[in-house]
Image 1 (spheres, rainbow, N blue to C red):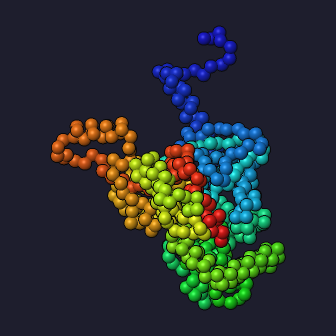
Image 2 (image 1 turned 135 degrees about the vertical axis):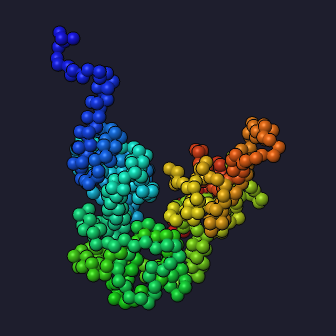
Length: 482
């Protein structure tokens, strides 16, 4: 080959072409690992972890204006920014778009699902030509399991992003610039509370403003429920502004993570941000008016108490039926559910609320779902439509059944999961082949079952079958505007 044009790398004696290519590949990966070490988001990660990440990377290029992630859809990749600029935005509780930050070389995004976050993502868009390294989350998750250092570095980014996102979702702070919110984020003190405990006691002096990072709480005055607060809400401001003790209890409905802004920092912030102080006073007046209205309206208090007791506020939607559109004795929706799933997962005649029957079915609890906490094998998981599904790893232990406070989970025979003639024939053949006295149980004979909004189908069986449109999936805010 001495007459060939160009210079070829000579291979060492005894080295095959495949060996040479493998060596070149490993050398390229080592250079990539060195490049990864220079990214701010991976500072301090051991070289072995960087080399492993280098094996996962795919270089991607995107033109300006390309949507990279959507805040309402969990992503599948972690992205490392090599060159270019991307913006992070989300919508606050009032529906306004808020700029959370701008990322450049050395930053990363898409880490949220690594830590179980499905509800607080951000929309990411390229602002310039961007060169990104794309890493599958499943592979990154495997690397994190073997590397506390890598897991710690990514978790620190996640926590910072989570705090900044929480501030962005609170209308009170969403009007501030990303830099101003970042300054506040540095003052916040994270606190965790289990379900059913009081964060604030009526009559005690106020010491902080509290922001709900995740979870749900209720406001009680003299033993009466008067308000429900969710992720992105805040409380404790009335005591600080009036310089008086708290006038209500704040109790957790689910496990809750809150961010506390100490009173001294809170008052200094209001002095530096007059517009923020004015907005906060407006919120206080609205809350006082709402509280007074609740106390004057026993019917509304009763409805609100029933909504909390029956878990109607635990999810984002509930299945409701309008009795006025139903024929007497009609069970078409329940029969359609049973025909699809082998047994009915919903029952009409549940809680009557504002003239609507809220069916007895799974609430799809967003935070602190008791069934998920009770499952010893993590068989109950979220799907991409916001429903809790029971996966094939369910062992039928039944721990989730008593754990659900709304009686929405039941144990059923595996035979009930399929109702077609072919399935019945196959099951009979299997039983015929089994010995008369089985020595071991090869598979569970039962499994947990509940409404999962018809996971795996493009429609809801109950809604599609209803001839009058009486049953529908309704947003919680529409059923009970708080």
